[in-house]
Length: 315
Length: 278
Image 1: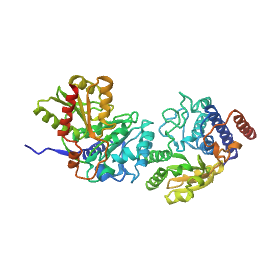
Image 2 (image 1 turned 90 degrees about the horizontal axis):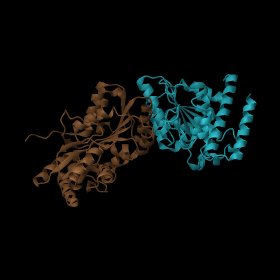
Image 3 (image 1 turned 45 degrees about the vertical axis):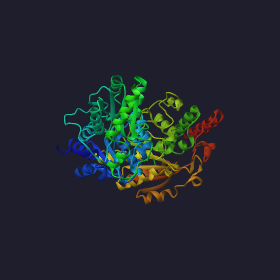
Image 4 (image 1 turned 90 degrees about the vertical axis):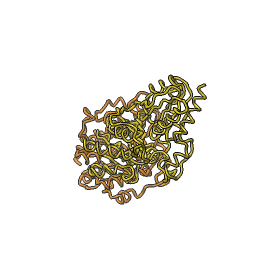
């Protein structure tokens, strides 16, 4: 068995920025003294004259980006999810969201897989916060291929885009010919008994959960949702109708994230059991990322258990 | 300043003040005090200084203006209306349902508004972004901003100030409307940012201190600012409520509207001022 190819989506973000920089020069990249960590440093190295460091001042960075966008120029800003979505929430809401400006926010180090830095840096609230902003597009890619394609696609969006990237290396899922489209979910495994709807690094876990369930005679559909807003309601409703039970999986609080978005759609269109797997209203803590994912129940076996519970509720 | 120009600007400023009072009176809410204090600065910029075209409000090479103290929207709306961006009559719809004249400036709704503001501290950062964009992409427009003195209590202002100086944004001029009053009292009572001039100097800005209700001094300051190789803060000593006797230096007119009787008093005083300039 060959070695599984992996990459952290933050590195994929950095690669995509360099690719964009080679193609066009109508945009600026900014960071708040975390370029080496967010990987905007790759762009900084390739195009130093097109990179601006704001220093440790995320609120200022977001509003500066808004000002740049009013001049008709593109801008990509980056920081950790905690400080982009969290600290600068109101700047994103009022300076970027309300005027519907073309600002791309590349938020890295999302979720508990930040690892050793601990709870102050483990942002499990960003999707919920960003979902409340009208007109915001939210993309949480599952692997390198999807992350790179998503960054390119984000440049064509009219309005603000929040992109969520991780620190931990995750396995490649998609081929180069994957046709990524903002707002489109992707069915990765067919199944009739239950549907697992996953986002970000939980997509790989969902694929493994499919195999676990298959061995137990359960046919689980797996859907990848990269774009959490606007949500692909069609693929969710179809899954609810055809499989009658849903499990959502995200490295994020179960309050207001993918699970909530899916539950909203299911409740209003085709009520079936929806079980949300995620971080259950607690803070994270320090430790190696893989151990934290084990401890917080964000693994394939945990998804498989929830799937069986959803099946019971379906009866 | 040329005497004729000064007279013309003084007349415009009175008309702008009438528009402010009209808007706030019609809405029965809004912020007259801090609108009146910065009315002369805005009048100078829009009637004399800025490269703008009311017929083509989005033209790419226009100078930019950001009202960082967004609650002074009546001043900005009145200046834009009197400058021909839209009908002066529209001011009467200020803060009404369906009106483009929202409580705080909305760039998507109002022709001539370059940035949506209202949440204090964010407008100056946006102005910094505009100045950075111009510098980076080789555009030669200037960026003007007006901040309140109370607004300087927002930490983001100083993040913006630090950045603007570090990046050498000499195409940015920020006016500080130092009228000494904010909602809860005098700025000394609340949480003073004084000494304002020394703070901006310490952040490596060029600082010019003037009487912000005097056109000669406003013009001289802007001319001097244009020679600077740093961002410029023009610290403007102003009178809150300027031009309406009972509103002058009175904290209770920060965010309340005159009733019908006081409206007539205000308009009477402003009409008198206009007649004197005729």
